[in-house]
Image (cartoon, rainbow, N blue to C red):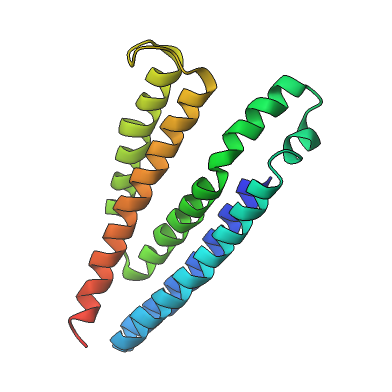
Length: 173
């Protein structure tokens, strides 16, 4: 599906970024680190925005490719209004997670994503969708809001982590 393709592109560009960043750190070429991160983020955001806009533009047609049930297609079309933002955040998050590997940083990102998904996103989605804790049950929209909240928080935490790690190398220039 589209989300899988977006994830694969983010993963591939992130791996490439991690490799060139690690090589630059190994050569002590610290000015190259930030240039490589900048090139990677421009590529990945351009891709995410392009795919997101395409999904948004075709939000009425895409659901009909996967279901003949008009009620499911209507719900899917309504959820796809948020798809561009979700896809940009998703591809950026995957890219950042992979890019951090170039800094040999894997444990803290794992913890940050655990907090974002399992301690914030999933409980929020569950409580919004299946309980009346927030005043009413929001059904499928509650699950999607929880997923969106988790990925938004995860992306913000991971981008902050990457900025912090790359800042260490900006100081050496």
